[in-house]
Length: 200
Image 1: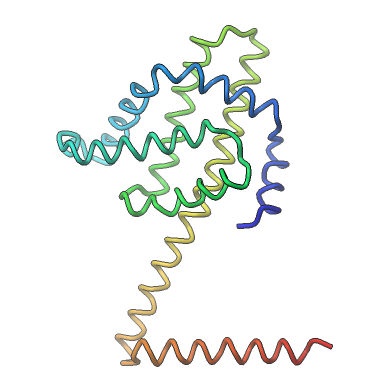
Image 2: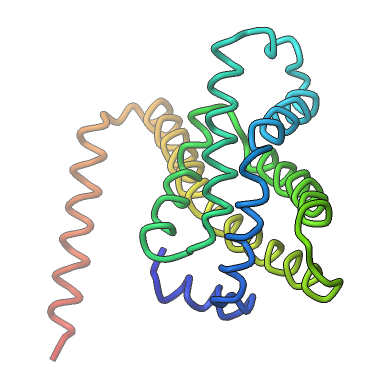
């Protein structure tokens, strides 16, 4: 992922400093009840995954809460600067390590949208127009965050698929992995030489 590409994404959704300020205000409203929200999200996610029995496992719950806390606080950081982008992209890559699918993240996005919209209405003393702007900024942040996480997740998933296909190919053909890697490296060198020769 390139910074230029993500800048285009931000421009597309219309993300600006006003949105960043609204998300920061929403996060301050949520701080006292952050643990309650994470607990609610964990229970809803466990129900979706038919994993209610695991909620009695303290280590599982601790790991799930840690992931949800990182997801929620990252979302509400709302900076979307270079460091934030890298962190969220890396978080997307770690989803597979904690047995969360991208479908789970889509569910979390929608559950969190509902929960945070309720928090905004209950705790933010704003006019109806300001409330609408705050919810709009939340939707923008969710869109940007989902884009970053999706890119990181896809790279890991595609890497796993490539390794599975390669393992299948090697099993069928009887090629050794070393031979395959040497052939692939030789092909890359050949392509580089052709490209260099074509440059005037």
